[in-house]
Image (tube, rainbow, N blue to C red; front, side):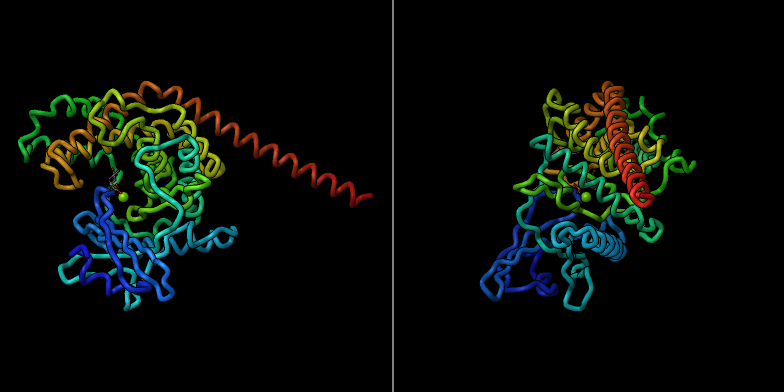
Length: 393
Ligand code: GN1
Ligand code: MG
């Protein structure tokens, strides 16, 4: 057994006898294990066990309160819609004392949920259908939570997407130069500074009330949606630790950043990095199908910009961490954070060039969906007319 799992497994109400636990090397923050148990009838029961990184998430109990409230809300709605709640939301395993989080002797926090069969995640999109379906899944996620009161949620990481505050931390890190790396990244620092005026746009629109505060996921990486092996559908949105009040634009932006990049997040060959317009279109198509009827005009107008901003923001976060000596994100080699930052900057620059085309695509799908809706409404009214005529006759 991975020594980290010893003393943890026995505290959860897993079903069966423990067989093995393997570390999944994904995610930049938490530690994730896939654990297998042999059930009473010889069947295999599989669970995901995760250590919550409490340096990043300072209040793991609050975080799990959020996650349980959200998944409960989604489960009810999925059942109402005739869906399958075992697959369409995460189902957490209680501890033996009936909680959903376990604090072990050395101070680490753990939680567990059922593994979902027949699905997988992708680091890079393999085909446009997956991206379309991811757009639908994240759009649906927002729709399902659109009546969840945002102020009932704990803020698990304060100012997570407060880009101007992130910029201030970035400038501080440059000033302090804790790891002596500033000299090496002058060009990247300039890239961020040149875009200083873009950074407060979304926060200002939220402050003025032009952007509504919603329950948002805030970490809508393409690999945070489980894709069905057979149908290619986006079955379930995972990684709910950063679900907090925010703007729909954070979610759209981060998905485009990760799902419509032609390269990996840490690709060393920058010539491979660009915004794939087919994937941008597919994601937009899926996302707007689920959300066009409740997003307001300011949200719609800023969808393309949000992709640029969130890409820039994450590039700045990676660069800040590089300058600070790699203290936040997990890294696998010395310049990992720098490579990640460079990819984001290359991608953001490419998005800036493609901004007008991105806007045209957004408009196309807003019109298409509104058109569909108008047709639907006029069919409904013709139906009503004919009913009336019938009644009169
Ligand atoms: C982190 O660990 P993961 O991959 O779910 C980070 C996100 C970044 C992402 C970049 C809490 O998410 O904000 O976009 O890395 N999560 C946190 O890969 O900081
Ligand atoms: Mg995450």
